[in-house]
Length: 360
Image (tube, rainbow, N blue to C red; front, side, top):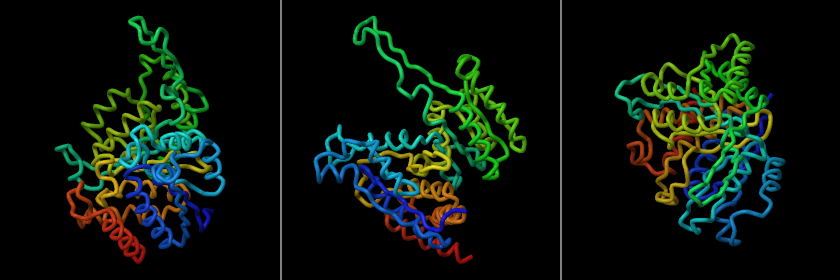
């Protein structure tokens, strides 16, 4: 039974995170309160504010910091890491973002991409789109295992290893089927390139179909990654939950976000089921609009929705989704979506919409 009080560590980080994380936290608190859940949010100024105060954005022991935050909170809401006009270009809190993902073993990168309104889709053909990319987040070629021989010469050799373990593939496939079952999706599509990557993706084939056999109430299907990219553009309404490896998931999640309006509408979770997890908007620091009060808070707020759902508070999560749908319907949105409101005005509308929907 989910607890009726949850403790959230909120870390704005750099840049536009300082606009959108407070906004998302405000909406999450309101949605929790409207559902009988007390949401306690503690803000931590790791990143640019710490740099301005102490000369460096993070303490030396980042893994220790992550473990300490995890010991005192139920989830972590992160803003963005990278360029910020208030600090040198090489200074940021990316090490904390990486630490949160690795120390917490957030092996599920969950990136929903539902279409809020047909006007946000760049396709001429208007169809319903409700995509969820479930990306393995700890293995693959992005583990940075490899090296260079004769680096900087005309004979240089670069090797990048692709790491795939039974444990890693099995747990992400199992999560995909269980997520589909728990959220009303009828099918899970696995994307790979096993015709060429016979060893690594041969493992994905064996494990995926064995997992599908254990979840017969949800259909399993396979697509080669290049074919899937083409079919997502041609027929996005034919797909729902997609599970794949780290690199392909990174690519697919941006493609799916583009089909529904871009990364300004994309929230995500780096999830370790049953353990402390981290949630963040997909977008970066957006230094050109940071601190101007015009940033779109939807992506961060949708990350809060994913967080509440993960913690077992589905009603609170549904209230946030309903509020954002209402904001779009009534054109109570920021300039990037064609509206005229600033960040705080959109946030206030969402909070009011949450209470309106809760009353129904």
